[in-house]
Structures are given as C-alpha cells and as structure tokens.
Image (cartoon, rainbow, N blue to C red; front, side, top):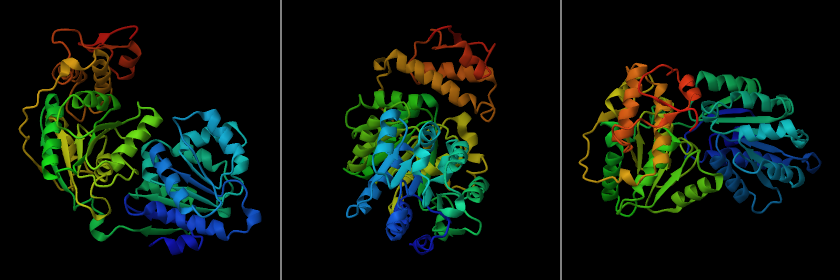
Length: 444
C-alpha cells in the first residue's frame, strides 16, 4: 500500500520490503492499472517485464498476474531456464505477451539470438524483483546487458524491490532507475534488524552427527506442532540435500520428505514446491534454490545444517518462517570449525543463543545409500568448504583430512579405503595439487 500511489503516478521506485508482505501485488497492480489506462494503439508487444532471480519465483509471479488478469484480455508468459529454449522462444514470438516474467540468464539468451528485442520496443514498466538476490546469484552482468536491449530508461517506468539496500543495490538503482527516483521502506522499525521477533538458536556438534541431530530437531517440531509441523532444512550443497533425502526417506514416523535443489529438473522442483505449499505437515530439504521469494505458508521451523555462505544467506533462509506476522523459529547447526561464522560482521548483532544437542537414538542406514551418491557428496563438500578453509583455521592438508573423516563418519564410506576419486582438473582448481590424502583419478 505504501508504494501504490507513487507507482500509479509513474514514479520510479526503490522499495525495501520483506518477502511475504504482498510485495508481488505491490508491483503488479500499478503496472497493470497503468497498462489498462494506456491508449490501445500503444499496446504493442511486451508492456511489462518482471525479472526474477529464480524459476520458481518467476512462475509464482506469473500465477499471481494471471489471477489479477482473470477478467481482462491481457496475456502473461514466462522465460526461464530448465525448459526447452527453442519451444519457449517460438511461444514468445508467436503468441500474445503483454506481461513477461523472466530469469535474466534465459531472457538474455533469447535477446541475443532472436527478434525478441522487437517485442520489447514499447516496454512501459520493468520490475526487478528480489534485486539483492539477483546480485547474489551473479546476474549483474546479465542485468546490464538486458538494459541494452530495452528502450531508453526515460521512456519507461522502473520498480526495484529488495529485502536489503546495500551499496551494490544502490548502484543498480542508479543505473536502472531514472534520476530523482523515490525510496520507500515498508519495514517497521523492529523489522529492520534481521527478524528479531524470530527465536534463533545454534547448536555445535560434529558434522558426522548433523543428520541424526536434524532428525531429532524435526521430531521435536512435530511434537510442538502436532499435525502442522512444516520444516525447511537447508544444506550447503545440492549433493548434501540428495544424500539427506536418501537417508530421511528410509525413516518411519516423519512427515513427507521433499527436496528442491539445482540438480533436480524444473518439473520436479515445481512439483516439490507445490506439494510443500499445500501440505499440512512436511519436510522440505533444499540447497539455496528456495531460499528466497517462494511463499510457503505455515513454515514452523527453518533448520540450517552446516555453514551458510554468508550472513545474507542466513537471513534470507530464515525469512522462510515467521512470514506475514506468523510465528516461527530458526536453528543453525554448526561444527566446531564452523563456529567462526557466528562472529562474522553480519552475524554479530543477530540474536542467536546457544542450545544443547538434542538426544538422538535414531540409527541411520548409511550402508543403504548408493556409493555414487556418497562420492558426489564428498566432492561437493570438499569443493564448498575449500573456500572457507582459511576462515575455519585449516591448512589445505587439514581440510583434505577433514574431508576424508567426513566421508567415513558422515557418509558411511569404508574406513581404510581410499577416499572418492577426484579429477586432476578439479584438484587444480581447488588449489589442492600436491596435498596428501586425495585419490586422483584421470577418469571418474
């Protein structure tokens, strides 16, 4: 509501807004209203372009736009990765499209290889949704390139929405919005400090105990919310998500176990997201694909297992719970070497309190997990934590030793056997050439 009058008046806006606060409606309503009032002879091609950081969020925005346009003749289309590019382009060129919702990478592919720029020549409004996330995912070069295919900025309206307003966001705003744009913060005074109303705790335990501890925490949430426990569990890598899914799906007494990560196909991700949305009780395992934008109602717990990439990622994930005024809590599982994260600049002021390790008597059937899945999880672990070895106080040699220990104790790799193989190129890229304890194989 705070942005509607300004947007309807045609102003460019930089809006700071939490997810789960009706943000999508805040940019769709005024853009559609202005489109309705525009002379019919100026409505050619795409009038409204919405840029989204993820496929899932793009499809959610499209769905909301179609709901708003139920009694109008305007059409909405999407351009997202993970789908057939040729078929998608054919649809975009040959079918009506007044509103286009797109992820930057796929849109840029189309703009560079087709006549799609012609369809954007009369663009009236561009929206950057979850702009901070667009930057987090490395889309800045794509955003700059896309703007080169659009009409001059003085001829169109631009709306930029972001949960945080950093120097980088302000730099994007300076390039994308017209001079004299308005800044609107929809955050209340007590919302500007990282969800201070959300109960947040951390638990320190060896990585070998991460999954059994996570199961105990999920079971505690089930007791606290009988029949309505909805847990989102985040892991550093997609391979760790897949490994956890394999283990948890073998346990009795848990709600349905769903997974979303970059290794899943687009239809599989959409199916899992839709199932979690409507479920009364479920567990959604994720890497970072679902960390922002998707609106999952009723999430009672966000559990982050292992080291988040940074404080922003921690905050973004936490934002899946306690949405739109609802209650929720967050728990962070770290091993001792990862504890440094709590003292990093973005985390120092976040009200995280220590909690004891919950009792666990759940046997995990590590022997039932496929060998290939263990190999993939090991490689992903080494690749991820290699970037944090210095922060964890580990030499490269100690990191490799920790990876071998992780393989045996957390993944169930046979003790005494060489660790999973690594290609020479991967070893070189990680700066691990010459480090003892690796199993280097020419072909994997």
